Length: 208
Image 1 (tube, rainbow, N blue to C red):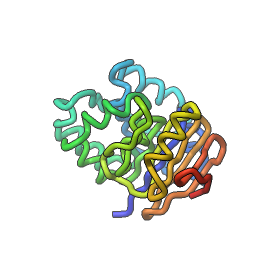
Image 2 (cartoon, rainbow, N blue to C red):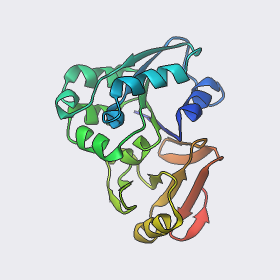
Image 3 (cartoon, rainbow, N blue to C red):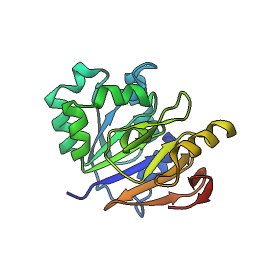
């Protein structure tokens, strides 16, 4: 099954993407589930409300799935909803927590089978084969849902230089700021909104 994977830098970028019919082709009343795992430490329910508020006015049917730990990630009901939904929105927050919760669980397997995923902020970094550890910028292992690209939030010059050095040229590093939108369809990545997006391979700036 062909899967769409989109990374957005913020809730504002999410609203802009979902509201632009030239970019997002969801039909009226589309079934959208929100997965706030990464926001568990700051409040999963509040994060889901923030997503709903950001897309208020769009004709979407939203349901929040309270997947906050490995116990809830083992719930087959949540996994089924993720697979059935027209779109899955992954909230921003702690990438490391999201990875530990989703890895080797029914919910994690469902994310790999979802028709369309939109990851907000740090959640995007979890989905690739390579994940950038936010604690120091070193590459580590992600969930492996996509290849060829690793995501990082904007960071200081020294940390990004270290990340680029450790990552090398095999994987493109995408530094995704608040306004940026990057998408992968049929395994091919492209920049949708180039504001606040910086792409590099090794020490060389490039594009997707």
